[in-house]
Every structure is written in structure tokens, then in C-alpha cells.
Length: 227
Ligand code: DX5
Ligand code: ZN
Image 1: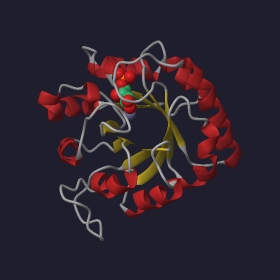
Image 2 (image 1 turned 90 degrees about the vertical axis):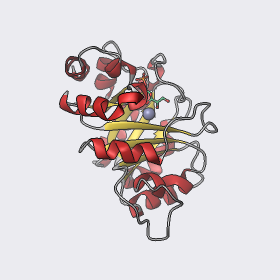
Image 3 (image 1 turned 135 degrees about the vertical axis):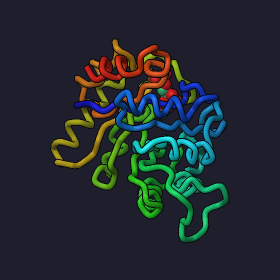
Image 4 (image 1 turned 60 degrees about the horizontal axis):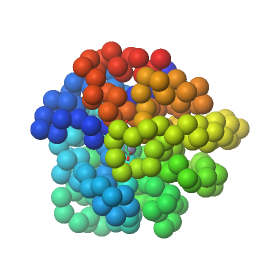
């Protein structure tokens, strides 16, 4: 069964802990946390302080999507929800369970993957709509997840780009051929119309922000998104 990862970007931030508990009770599988720095993308969103609060609010895995320049500088910060610069031993408390870095922002994907693992989280890589999927093939045996963006990152509530579905199928075929243990996540514009297409193309995890938090009944929408 496909997993659903509500993106808290569209949650009511004045009641964040309650919103997270509500989606957890409604059957969400992961909590998707969109970190934006105002450089890699035009928007500024969430820092480690919020990750720390989200961690306390749920037992679900935290799927932290880094849309930032210099991700290597911040991987330990988000893995451990550090409020100070990282120390050499990555001390700190629990933060992200999964960290994904954008291939367009990473200076060395292999090194970032090693750093994510050393920080205690599962590594993933993200490709923007205009980035060819083949770019992740050399690291496929080293990651737990590949995230395919179905909008240009920066904002919630954008329109799904169906042209990325071809990348989902291509990646699915490559993963099966290698028998790799990699999940495919898709992010941006997922709703009850687009979810079936993403599932058909081979997505294992659907991120949904406005579709979930904009719905009246979180349990009903999560069930409908699963198909
Ligand atoms: C886009 C973010 C997404 C976004 C999803 O930059 O990475 O996670 O918040 O929001 P919806 O589901 O509203 O497109
Ligand atoms: Zn995201």
C-alpha cells in the first residue's frame, strides 16, 4: 500500500503539535518537513527549532526535505535537531529520521549521503522537475529514498507537472532491475486527481500538503489519496 506523508507546510502553525497529532491519528505514515532557506528556493520556512517541536509531537518518522544551499553544513543540525552549530560527535537529540538533499544543491552527493548516515538518519536524494533522473543512478545502492519533485520547489499549493511521471516509471524500472531497497517519493500538487497517476507510475510515498491540511476530514482524505 502506498504511504502518505503530509507536508506540514500547509498545517496551521499556530496549532502545529495538534495538527501533527491529528494526521498521525488519521493514518499518516510519515511527516514531511519542508526546509527552505531563501537561497536555493525563494521561500524561508522551517529550522531545527521547529523540527525539535515536531519530533516531540509524534512517533511517526520525520522526512526532512532540505531545499537549501550548502546542505552538508546543516545535515547534522537537522538529524539531531541541534540549536547550536554541530559538534564533532554530532551530539544532540533526535531530529530527522530521513534527510533528503537536492542534487542541484549538493556539491558532492556521495559525501552528503555518508554524512546523513553518520548523523544517524536515512539518506535520500531529490530531483527537481527539470533534472534528469539518471543523475541519481550512481548512488541508487546507497540511498533509502529518491524524491521526485512534481512542482518546482518553493511553495505549497502548486499545480502537478504530469511530465515527471515518466521519470517515476524510469526510476522504478531501474530499482527493480537492481533489486535495490529504495522507495520512490513524489512531492508537489498531489491530490485525489493526481495521486492515482503517481501510484500507477510507481510512487511508493505521496507527499501531500494542501490536499491533506486543506481537507475537513484528514482520515477521509488520507484514505482517498491511497486509492
Ligand atoms: C514544495 C514542497 C512540497 C509542498 C507540497 O516546495 O517541497 O512538499 O509543500 O505542497 P502541496 O501538496 O500543496 O503541493
Ligand atoms: Zn517537500
